[in-house]
Image (cartoon, rainbow, N blue to C red; front, side):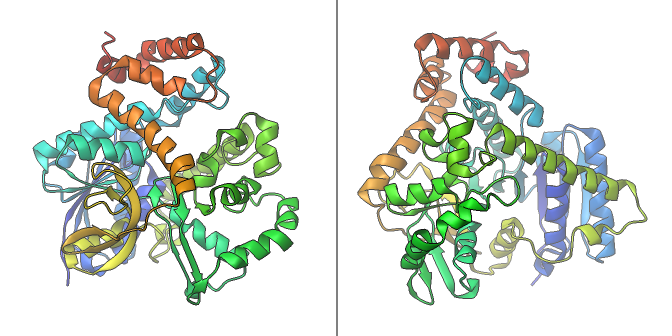
Length: 446
């Protein structure tokens, strides 16, 4: 069965992401004939992405059509699916906000960049209510947890958040020497805050295999140092979190949980290896450099029309869930996926229905139905989930109400805050920055 749809990508100037989506569309025949609209505020990158997409579809002889626009409203009109991958101000503004916080004593930042991001998400969702109210919004840019919760509470748009973090269970399995064909795992929670509540190999509990690895091989693994710029999933921090919380943290969770792993560079090195992990000043710079290298490679392909785009974007379905989920929804191809959706029907009974949670979801022509999860163990609930929920509520409530005091409370909750004056100083500078004008207006700053 083939069902053409209109897919709009907001922030489409990310050539690697957008071309990857087109490749996935090319290898999913059920969506052939679809139209993709690329929207970005950078005309040069928009032109490059559009040309890449056209060439890739032609090489793979796929019936897809494309358009491009700098106008968000134009892009949204008539869309069936909207993929939001935009980063407000790009990496430059995100890094500027990190540096601003560091000047006020917040080592590696205070995550204030989540506020302009989530505010932008809500603007997109509200525009969708006007111009494509029946479309699905697929949120791939962060913060997925706070942003999706805000949009689900404030609009009637169908909101779906997607992330790669759950694939971390594969890294655990590979390190244990397990055949992935026989591995299963359940990883509910909040985005970037998920826990492997069930882990099986050939139908048997696989946690004893992890315990054996910790006892006999972990120290040797850590002594080898990280592969690439970070060792996250099997880091000393991840294993310590397993030991003190009772379940293995998965994906980005080991780098997000626990302020005590991140007090300074030396502490980071102790827990994440000699580079200090993905989020250290060393690891993050290596990540940015690698990302820029990948962008440069894609741009070379885009500029050199003698090269085949399909040599870079192989015609094989990627690990991205976006296109398979779209296909499942429009062509009723039922499948299980890891999704971030409102907790309607209390998929996880310890949380309210208007909170977006991450869980397994059955996706089909009937929509997305979250698979019910057993309650979290008391230790994880009290020490990890409730505190994370609290921080998310501060972000959401601040943007819902425009109450500057809630912004201040958000900073005061940080373990890097040493005084009220420190938090007030950062907040004043951040709201006064002209690059932050849209968010500042939400909080009464003119």
